[in-house]
Amino acid sequence: MGTLITPARNSIYIEGSQFRSAVSEDLVQRLGSSINFINAYQHSEKQFFINVPYGRVATVPVTAVDGLAVFEFNATIIDVWMFNITAGSAGTTELDLKIATTSGGAFTSIFTTTPKITSAAGNNAWVGAPGGAYTPPSGTTAPVLGTVNINAYTAIRLDLLQAQTGGQNCGLIVHYRPR
Image (cartoon, rainbow, N blue to C red):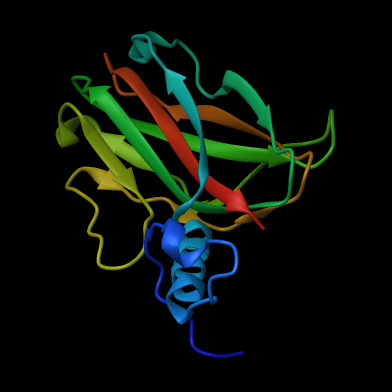
């Protein structure tokens, strides 16, 4: 291996790529930095939404909220964010993202710690697991990812484990990229 070209969004100019022009180091640097930029930052996301007053749910857990999704290719989950738009009057909202590797098979959590938001966090609260120097906001518990490598044709679903009394409109956003 060698030294990685710094990822950057660099444009390619006609003068550097015309027929019979010398291939310049600049062109190769621009191509390399652009490809590395795509490799580092390009990703997909799956959004699970509970766009109702979920705090009225009589019995939890509620499984497969907002359906399920199936990965079409091997993927790595790079981050997960939970949000809650309208805080309830009490309690905690807890979500879990689960996977099943076979159709009709059992679902298991991808987390070692599930994300949680208490009513004390207030309206428009969110919490994630981005790594680095991130500090979860007060009234939240950041998710801790256990399983991040997902094989093709694995299904994912969202389960509501706990609900704030009177809470409304929450969800989970899963960021992933091919591996």
